[in-house]
Image (cartoon, rainbow, N blue to C red):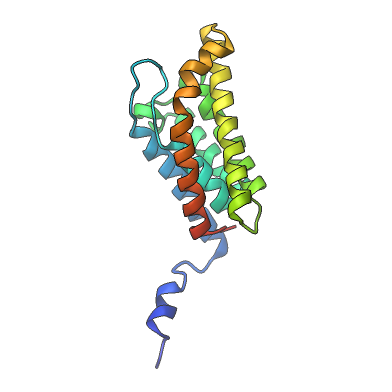
Length: 188
C-alpha cells in the first residue's frame, strides 16, 4: 500500500477540519501576541516600551484576513481583561486597559481588521505594504492620542513619547510581517 511521496506526506495538512485549522491559527496569533508582550525593551524617555506585539497584529491581518485577525486580537484583549497575565510584563485586568499604553492595545483588533481588509485575499507585495503601513499608523495614532488624553499633554508632546521614537522599529516590523505573510499566505 503506497501512501504517497514524501513531499505529499509533508505538505498534507495534519488537521483536516477547516474550522479546526482556522481556530488553531486564531489561537496561535493570540498566544504569539501574548508571548511577544512579555519580551519588552524599556526606553528611559518614554512609558512605552518596545515589544513585538504590533508585528503579530500586522502578520495576523495578512495571514488570517480581517475577521479572524480581529477575532484573534479581541481574544487577546479579552484574556487579559478577565485576569490572564497576557499584557506587557504579565499585566492583566480592566484597569490595565485604561492605563497610559491602553490606546495601543485597544487599537489591535481594528488594526488587524484593517490590515486584513486592505491587503485583500489575493496578496500582492505592494498592496500588503500599504495595508500594513496603514494598520501600523492606526495603532500608533490611537496609542499616542490615548496617551495625550490620559496624561493631559498635547498631541505633539505625546507623539514625542509614543510615536516618533517607534517609527523606524515599526517600519522594520512592517517589512518583516509583509515578507513572512506573503510566504505563509492567506489561511482564511
